[in-house]
Length: 269
Ligand SMILES: C[S@@+](CC[C@H](N)C(=O)[O-])C[C@H]1O[C@@H](n2cnc3c(N)ncnc32)[C@H](O)[C@@H]1O
Image 1 (tube, protein in one colour):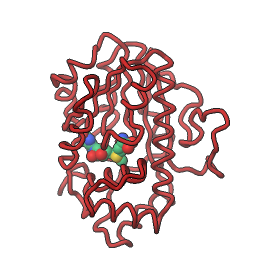
Image 2 (image 1 turned 30 degrees about the horizontal axis):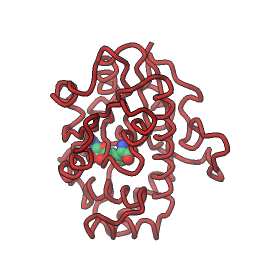
Image 3 (image 1 turned 180 degrees about the vertical axis):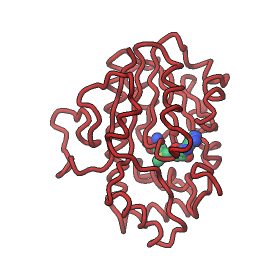
Image 4 (image 1 turned 90 degrees about the horizontal axis):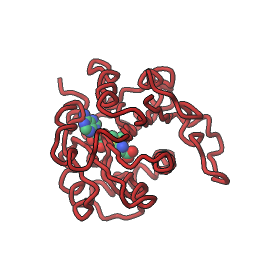
């Protein structure tokens, strides 16, 4: 049986979803017809999905700005999707030009565009690698060029762990990256919870005749907490996305506590 992380595991490959994210986040329609059509269909029948994607990117922006404020200038973004639409390098380098970012994603359909987007950016790169091959990621020449492992690093897994099955030991995977970075580094995670609402959302893929629905590995906030074992959780802990350090005066969701996607940030002592 194919691994859930293997590209093309459903009728809908991860590149179509990543490209739809780009359409929702940027408003641009400069993607293949299939991805634009998918983005439009989902926006029509399930507008909460593009809404969630935007809220998640807003949260990532707040997290990166917080990290830059803590003096973090190096970012390892694991399972990045396309680096567009207010992604890590845009926010971090917007706040401090010297910030360096390594994006990693194993979806082959994203490799060319991902690399092209940061091709002119000397402080960012896009690696087409499987994050489960930790040594390949950490020892890649591009990583060595951009990341100084003697200085604190932010390791980000934004909606990536749902692609990692429990059989593939996501806790061990997270620890391997945390072990590779020095004291004062951070781990940022966002993750869908395991509520019936999220399960029903995924069933929508079948109802829309988009092929087999993706088989995500959904985990509730208590389970997510184990990924931060040994780290100091930054306030307010692991909370629904809109409640993670909202900017003053930010227009919130009507029921932020009912958003079934959680975010947390931990600091290595
Ligand atoms: C839900 S998307 C999230 C993208 C991005 N982090 C964001 O916030 O928009 C998950 C991404 O993880 C990637 N991914 C899944 N398993 C992976 C693996 N084993 N190695 C590298 N990337 C992976 C997928 O290709 C996909 O682009």
